[in-house]
Image (cartoon, rainbow, N blue to C red; front, top):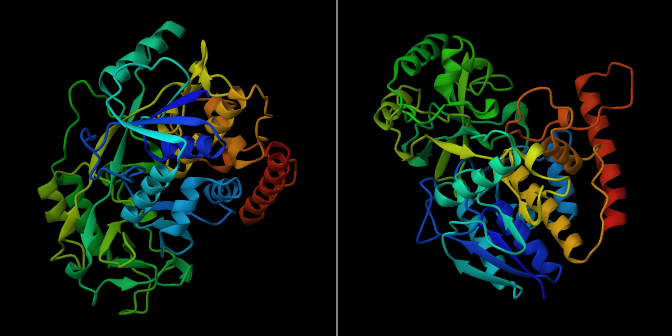
Length: 442
């Protein structure tokens, strides 16, 4: 029996391994934890979520919600884990991160077709291999990949950007007389988020403190190129006084019960676990030094005594130039036995990483069984993800991206539609076309 080597047991690696094993293939899952963990890791479990515990919107009228719907329909293991360990988060899908990782770890160990191997991979393995080592790939393996890439390109591209982690606060250190529970426009159960209200004066003082706060500087060999969808708060603050109040601190859809009015700005907190003993500062990824985070964030109303379970930080994110290095079937251009999946390909986000793993698993299975599968239509979320990886329609430098409606094939209409109607049309078309495609593939 052909054995598939899967390097890395993050979301993409777990998805690839479980999908292939469930389809009857033998899988060797190679993971360096727990003995050798990356700087962003805090546990020895598979599928660890190192940043936010949110998988973002579950509404299919958002592109990420449509991707979740397609993944769940196709039997995604990551979606099974997410729904089994979900915590309240309005119309978003958030999980208890420890239970989520434990679910995936248990599922992998329970699968008889998967052999788990704890090892640090320093070279690209021989034989059928899927590399899912994620955005922190480094050392000899990263160099081996870069060397292989330079052999296909006239110049070696050192592609990376910075991803950031938001702080987590202990619940009983929050002043709940000031911080109020409410979701924007009362979505979900209406009180899934906690909100820190700020007046104009409080917001002004906060922005000034963030701008003047001492930051961690990049190493001399690093060129800080941030992902626009996950900017550190100090980068946003530096772009103008109102940038934060129109970004993660926007107050729309929220009313402070103490005043009966909308605050000038808010900081939202999201549950980190089912017990609601820990809260994540939504959108508050930062490069502020730890003492500065404590000082500045304690300026926020209701956080004067905040105890931080984790401070924010920023880490390097490495990815390959997928459009030039991978075929439409997501294997290396000059090596049909070498595949890449997850964030190392240039997809951004937990869900997109797992979805990429699902895509690759389908292509690996087809290759082993000498079958050909039609690509998912570009009108679907999976098709949109493939369009991104192929650079289809790209008019700028390739860089990591979340799935969004702009990656989908345009709607077949010349009529200008309201935004809500347009999203609904995208979602309806995507769902219809994906079900049709899946029925012919599955």
